[in-house]
Length: 102
Image (cartoon, rainbow, N blue to C red; front, side, top):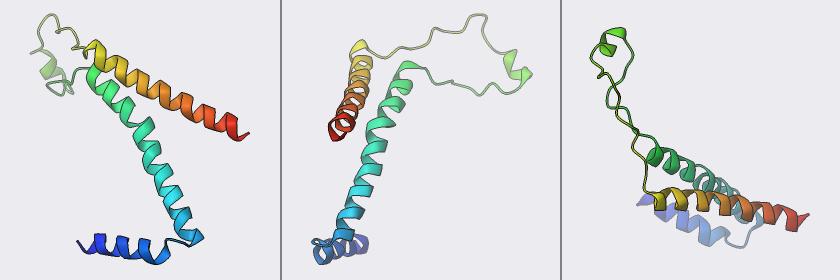
């Protein structure tokens, strides 16, 4: 609660200063960069590849493995398409911004 009050107090006191705009720009860039570039990759990898049920770090554990491992679980086609669409759209949008600024 105190952090929220301090944040709002700083925003109200500094809302017209250039330093505040710089802080907002950089924090937005860092947070949105992470959200737009890392989260789609994590979602895509998380949905397309199965998680291992057991850690297979020793030879003794390998003796308990079945003859044939199950096929990897694939994400639904719509989820894979959406993840790739969002990543491609984000990359295309930022490419457009770079070209438009030049």
